[in-house]
Length: 390
Image (cartoon, rainbow, N blue to C red; front, side, top):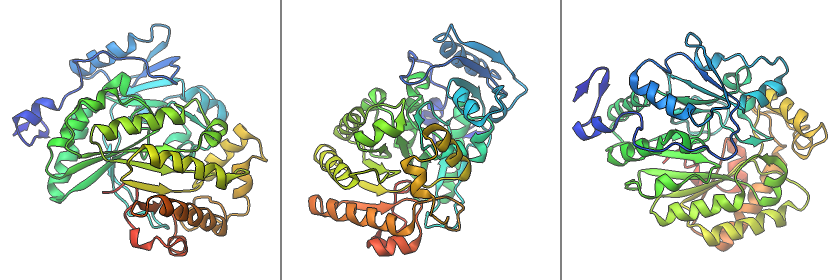
């Protein structure tokens, strides 16, 4: 069936490809909205206008700025200092449209298998002090929290891409955002999860630090949405993951969605070698594996760009645990900064051995690493079977 510029698989699917309207938006925790910007495309249709207005109504105290000739990624935050701009962006909600929201990753210089990803939202309100996204080109100049209102068009593009590929294909939500942090506002999960559940080929892999899973529990998913959590031990999260849901709440959310039948994964990244890290991480993993039936576990270290490192230094001071460990690291060909190779191998090998003693058959992988590290850790049989792909 064709309707306008969209190609739908059937009438039922066509009916579902629209902005959510039968729900009550709620303020998500950890997002203090002081300014709302309505950018290009945000009010182009009646559906978009209604969607935006009902969310804006939650924030009567916020400054609302209409800048309908400005694209979503060019909002002026009135701050020249990078850290001040970053902080202002975390308090700014942007509505707009993303016309190239479905993309194929082209990571080079490491063993990332590359994958399809999409953006129904952008960036996130959380305050992780090691955030690598903060140093990327797309975020550095306009680090705002975004909701893209052209959701039907985005889903239609996923549909076309998956049907062209004609094989089960993951579409990852989490490369450039937190996949669930804004769901209390947008209810996008109520459209995305059913879409993927009905699709012959398209599958969703979603990464989050959020505990906002209430809407997910009653949705028909057929195992076509994989939910993955970014985790750190509580001791590490308390120091480096400011303004985020507690690790306990995240693990509880993981257990709840696993009970509802979703495949669940975990990503320990960045692993930070704080004092006593071996005991801290093993105690955490023992607790996690006892409570959540994981499908896959992925390890990763700091993997950042120079811009993000400069923000880390400003947030944490120049002698912080993260950046000191990076000082002697030579970046591998992808241009990212990491810990020295020997330290990464030591961390991964130690944690892999511990996990094998508890759960011998659990699939494990490394994120954004080089082949020499996979080989030294003994995980090359899982190369290309990491978090963001099926």
